[in-house]
Amino acid sequence: MPYSMTAAEAARRLGVKQATLYAYVSRGVLGRGKVADGRSSLFDPDEVEQLARRGRPRRPAGAVDITVESAITEITADSLRFRGLDATRLAVTRTFEEVAELLWTGEFPRAQAVPPARAAAHAIWQATPAALAAGRAAQAALPAGTLPLERLQVIVPAMAATDSLRLQLDPSAVLAAARNLIAGMVDCLPAPPCSGSAPPGSAPPGSAPPGSALTNRTSATSFAPSASGVPIAGRLWSRLCDRRPAPELLRALSAALVLLADHELAASTLAARVAASVRADPYAVVGTGLGAMSGALHGGASLGAETLLAAARGSDDVPRVVGELLRRGEKVPGFGHFVYQGGDPRAVLLLGLLRRAAPKSGQLAVAEAVLAEVRRKSLPEPNIDFAVATLARVAGMVTGAGEAVFAVARTAGWIAHALEAYAGDGPLRPRAVYTGRPAVVDP
Image (cartoon, rainbow, N blue to C red; front, side, top):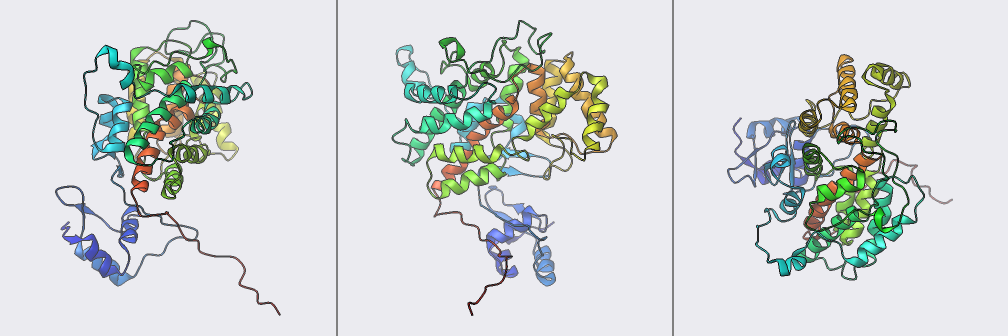
């Protein structure tokens, strides 16, 4: 297909703004090519001409297009790229911290030799003592059984109150706040209660896998070590699972963090970006994102998938569990994606890592049985929510662990979008189409 018409030319021929042009692309109305540098879009003149003659495509009732130009993440029908790099490749070759820096700056961090005497000064992925104290105290006041995501929703504003420079929005200040924030979100979570000494990667015998919800312990032993030299993946593991991880499972958690780091303008990212466009501080941006991602149709979907997996007493019990779900008129959580029609590449990678990490896991057998039952019924392929829920079950993590993994990971993306919004012209302000009663003129 000869792509030779620039975006400006195509928009002018169609009589629309370039933002609307890109909305046509996202809806599949127009194809798009790119110039060699990958920064500019080109369009097929014949396709543009055909669309111009047909007239503007009509949107379904209730649909809305919100298009934002961004250099962070690109999604196609079968791939996900961060700054032009394949996210599934990054998930197995880079750490979460490296990918976060890539999203924020467009570059990987440069390795620097740091003398031991100055190591503390370079511990950038470390929350301040004041932030840790405030975050831990805030979450400790919550009732026993509070899920990790709900704890994170109170940890973030508590940490914000300790940062008197949080409204300093130049890039270097935002990056410092981001590292402080992500490290604090993880390190403020209490360690899960002990549930025995079962082998890594399996649920403790005689207990309800994967563990019970986080307890309200506040003693010094309730918080696992938060040394800044320990990667975020390892520190998060210690908050979600009471056993040392097998190396392969820890790599799977690290991969999950990378795969979930951003996903273009998902609902939570749009909400976070709107907040940033009106110059909300990074903590408020992340708080906004956390609120949106908690919805059952977004990040909360992993909790639904965890519940599904937990309901089966074993792989032989899966048909009953799935059948009952469908009889109630409910969808099977963790399956299908409106972008990845042929299957979510993030789920494919993460499930593959889990199969290699724990091939004999009973919890993995349950997940495989769910996959087989869903495919037997010709339902959609699994998405990342199902894969993360499977990770949580196989690793024996606490209930709601998938949501926590999603929240910590996506914070990197929210900050990346905030940085773009801070550099933008002003508020992101969609308009409503009024459908209420006509204006009433007073007699």
